[in-house]
Length: 118
Image (cartoon, rainbow, N blue to C red):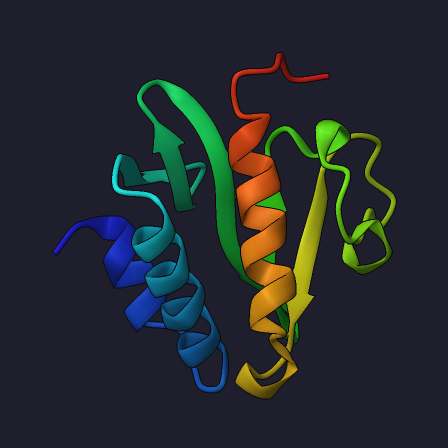
């Protein structure tokens, strides 16, 4: 088991379930994505380019997008939380996840994955 998978499995409920659901969604949508352990959290990469990270902080799970400045769908659901560039989807429970929104944001992030970070 790699450190990123260990990170996910060691989280308390309900956050572990949220992380496992998001992990399964990402890996079902994108064949060529790779889960790595960077900056002490799980990070998805396409080749050498970062795509998004998964992080359990405080009382929520953060799915942060590397090229968030280029995402154009469901902006009302993306959280900036005092960050200038990064945006994320946040979930406290599995029931909060709107699968359509999650998949559409992931797809939009995938579509802009080759843009430069800003």
